[in-house]
Image (cartoon, rainbow, N blue to C red; front, side):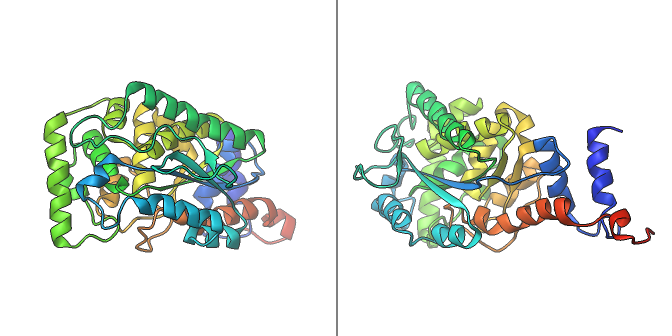
Length: 334
């Protein structure tokens, strides 16, 4: 019997009809295969929020000013954001990373300072970052996860904060999937119809300027943000270390897309936590042939969907370890 068959056999012999726990069974199986054990554990789970600013924000693609990025980072630090509330509720550790915020934070704040620069360039006129900056961001993201792994963490939820990053994500997804920007560009922080039309026009003009940039890293360098690039490196390292990757919404999924296009085996390590209300997320999930755990019309970011989905993953591990088998319970099988 192969190990995969052993895992399925253990699931099937729990005291329930075959398949009765539905998607929880698939999560449990995934956990077992990632950890190479019949008794999976969730250790030191973290949500990591990567924050960075985008030059494209100056083109009016967001309903909020760029200063909101650093202001929300301060809100994370003071414990007042949604992700703080949900992490406290579900006993998740929260790590905030300054990947490239256009602000100098006091050094004594509980923020992991990994700033590449104070925001990217505007891809409306030039590439968002240099090749050197991209390499630095990818390597930095990998080291963030290395630190977590060395501290015993085996599950990481990925979130972000950055005014303008839905514009960046739309460009990345369009370039790599071939889907038109008109199907991917959404309201982000709450644009009205006129503002949305302006955002789409800016992005289409940028796409025409740069042409069809095709390789994943060149797409990331041209249109990405430092927080997205660090997420890519972090996801790659998490997969390498057999950690479970929780993917949040639209922007985190764009980062995952880059990593996936570079090495599709990352799919075995990832769980998509929710279907974002942001236009284009369903299109991307269809492209990747994945099914999210939740559908709650969220479009907040911050890793909020990861924190909300976490109890389901915890339940999958617990039923594998604590639910009786037919033999243990003395219950007759069908």
